[in-house]
Amino acid sequence: NAPVVVKAEPLENTRTEHVSYADLDLSQRKDEKKLNLRVTGAVKRVCLFENSRMGLQDSGYYNCADDAWGQARPQIALAVDRAKQLAMTGTTTIAATAISINVPAQ
Image 1 (cartoon, one colour):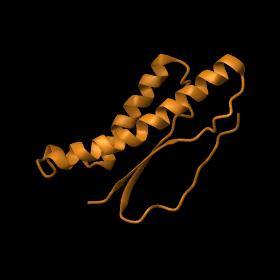
Image 2 (cartoon, helix red, strand yellow):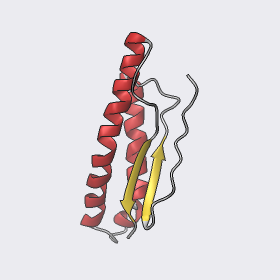
Image 3 (cartoon, helix red, strand yellow):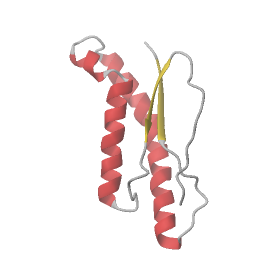
């Protein structure tokens, strides 16, 4: 399968992270765990975790992280479903993409 590249105009006043999983076989639990670790890193970056650790964001970080994970979880589930369909049938109707997280800039 050829890689799929999705491009969009950046949203104004937002911080965005795209998490690729093109190198992972999400039909395997170990690779699904790797994707979750990648998303964790993206959530920390987009929600400015370093600022939170310095006490600059307090609960704002956790609200942002909850929102970011709320966006990411359905995308992860879809990616895993796609991988399992491909593994079982060799075909899928679910498009390949990257996980995309967008949060308002602060």
